[in-house]
Each structure stands twice: as structure tokens, then as C-alpha cells.
Amino acid sequence: MTRDPKAIRIVFMGTPDFAVASLQKLLDSGFTVVGVITAPDKPAGRGLALQESPVKQFAVAHKLPLLQPIKLKDPDFLKQLTAWKPDLQIVVAFRMLPELVWGLPPLGTINLHGSLLPNYRGAAPINWALINGEQKTGVTTFLLKHEIDTGDLLLQEEIAIDEKDNFGTLYNKLKIRGAQLLTNTIEQYVQDTITPIPQNELAQSNNSAPKLQKETGAINWNCHPRTINNLIRGLSPTPGAYAILQGKFLKIFQAIPIDEKISVAPGTIDTDGKSYLRFACAQGWLQVEELQPEGKKKMNVASFLQGFRF
Image (cartoon, rainbow, N blue to C red; front, top):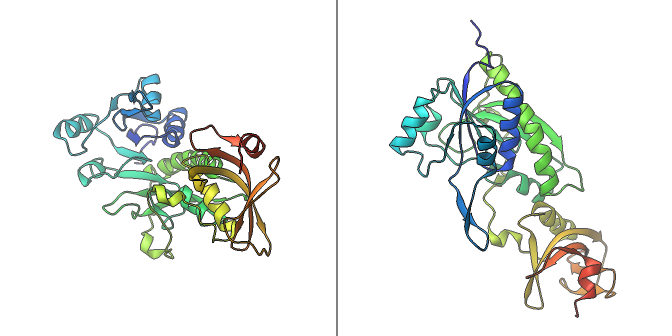
């Protein structure tokens, strides 16, 4: 007898607002979420006040049972998780799980990932797709196994990347499309109408999506302006690509690449001091539109030029 997807007991795991969209969709669609697991509160800001994750805030507002384990192998946490009697676990933007956790429910654990796996396995798939200048990406649901992002695929949806997309806009598109794909996946998976596909049966890609480091955002003016602009798009609005100007950090959030032959050295500045600012690159210019000087707020280039002296 086919099980009712809306009747199975689901435990949801996630931390950022990317995950909130999926949790909201599960509730709106009538699924039975018996518990939520998210990261412990962390100190943030100048006062280092404890900050709750977006998933915790959502769970509390909707009166959902909540756990915030520090260690996922902690016996007390495992006892509480087992007491929820999950049939299925859902993971969206959480941390790596031990087998003790992902193997607990009889239906296993489904992960939503922000790329077309096996492409862009890792912690920052949306950023790296933009940094590498991809024209398409997508969302994937898959079954968890030992190695990160390598489990059998369930469903995928491809999404075109607009040339004006940055991390913020693409993130928002993928979290909405991913939430819908997740509910579709649960419906079909529980009703046994999906055949999981091992990733090794698909064309492999060399692209990975490692966690962003500070040095990832460093702009190299010896690169093509489109390459630099892709880096800026992939790190905007956060954490931001940066250059050094007069010994201080300058974050750049929006720019226009200009492809043309030039005879000046990469990094050379050209400006009228009023309305435009551009940097020489290997084969053209990068015209800056939005930026943030060190210690100041984000601003457009005209505002920056009003108070800056070269």
C-alpha cells in the first residue's frame, strides 16, 4: 500500500534563510514536520550578542519542536532525535551529518543542494557558478551518504543565469525553486515513483564549490574584465570582492566590464573625479558602479568620488 506523503513524520535540518523557504513550503503544503534541528546560537556584531539562526526564528514563531546540538553524536541529542520517530529527514544548508543521524529514519535523509550535481559539490555552489561565469545552474535533491554531496540523485531543475544576476539574486531564485523541487521530491519519493540515480552514472565535472576564503575575493587586475566582473557578481552583496586603493580595502559590488585594447598597465585608475571610475585590466577596463571604502558604507561611484582624492 502506498504511503501518504503528508502523513509521514519529517524532521527538518537547516540554518540560513535559504533553508527557511523550504521549511515554509513544507508547512504550507501540509507535510507533517515533527521537529527542526538548527545550529546553536552564535555571538555576532560589536556587542557579541547571541544571534539565532533564521531557521530557529522561523521554528519558534511556528511553535515547532527545536533542537540545537553542538555535537551531532551527542547521546542526549540522539535520544531526543530518536524520540521524534522520524520517517524521513530533510537537510537544506546544514552541516555534514554522521551516519548515526542520516541513517536513522527508515526512509533515509534527503538533501537539497544549490547546483546541478555532480557539478559544484561543496559549501558555496551558487558563488562558484557565478565566479566561473556559468550560464546555467539549478537545484538538486539527493539521498545522503558518507561522502559529501555524492548520494544518489532524485530530482533536478535547471535554471538559466542572467548576465545581471549576482549571488543575492541567484540565491533568491534558487531558494524558491529549490523549495518547490523539495516538496515534489518528497511526494514522488514516498510514493516510490522516483528511481534514484547514482552520480557516477552521470557525466562528471571538475568544478567544485569549496568554502569561500578571504583571499577568494581578492581582485587581480591582470585578469580579463569579464573574469573580474564574474568574481564581483559571485561575491555580491556578501562577502564582497575587494582591491587595495591607497593602502586601504575597497570592496566592489557592481561593475561593468569593458572589453577593448588598452595600452596602460593593469590596475591603472581612470576617472573624471565626478561620475566615473574605472580600473585597467588585462584586456580592457572595469568600470565601477557600486563600492564600499574601508570603514564606510556601501555607495554609488558618484558619492564615492565626491569625498575621495586621488
